[in-house]
Length: 294
Image 1 (cartoon, helix red, strand yellow):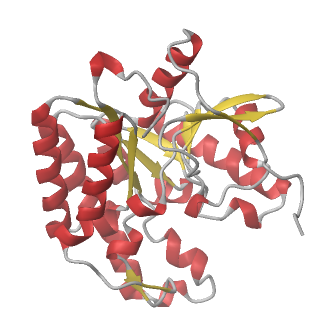
Image 2 (image 1 turned 135 degrees about the vertical axis):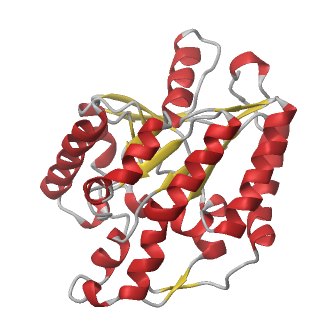
C-alpha cells in the first residue's frame, strides 16, 4: 500500500517515535489571556505534565533504553527547568514548539520571525545547541514557516499530515524533511476535555483511547511507514494511560523489528538515504498556494 517505503536502519520494518508536546499551562494563558491566572483547576491539570508526567515518561524510556523527542514552547522551557533538565539528562531531543504556543498562521511574517528567533535563543541557552526540529503549535504552520525554518538551518518539520512516509518541503532557499503525523495519532481527541480550552471530547478509557494508536502502528509496521505519535504529558502521561503505553512499548521493543529513534535521527537518516539514492522522497513545493483560492 506504500509504494515508496523508506529503507530503515538494520532492516527495521518501520520507524517510530512517541513525540510529546510539553505545552503545560501555556495553553490556558494563550486561550484565556485576561483571566488565566484565576483558572486554577485548568492550570493544575496542565502542570501535571511537567511536574508529574515528564519524570514518569523519561523513567520508562530509561528502563526500555530508548531516546525520543519532546517539543516544548520556549516559555515552558523557562518556566519548568526541572522538567527540561530531566528530559536532557535522559538524552532526549527538545524541538521548537513556539514561544507560548502562539499560532504562526495567525501572526504577521515579522511577528512569526520574532517568536521563532526568540524560541531558538531560549532553546540554545537551555540545551547548548540550536533546535533541529520544529512542530507548529496546533500544527498551524503559516505560508512563511517552511522558508523561515530553512533559513535558520532546521533539519526537519513535524507539523504536516501529507503522507505515510517522510517527504521533502521545497522552498526557494532549500529543502526541509517533513516527518508527518495526523489527528488520528494525537491524544487530544481521545483524552482531553476542558471547558477553559474550549475542547470538549468524550474521554476514552485508557486502553480504548490507545487502540487507535495501536491500529495505526500495526498498519505502519506492515507497510514500512513512519509512526509518529503526538502526545501531551498532561493527557497521555496520566497514570493509567501511561501504563497502557508503557506495556505497548515493552511488547514492541521485545519483537526487535521496529526502529524507535528521536525525530532528529529519523530526519538525518531520511536525508542520508535520499543523498545516496536509496530513497526518492516525494517533493512538495511550499507554500502550496500564494494567496486565497476564492
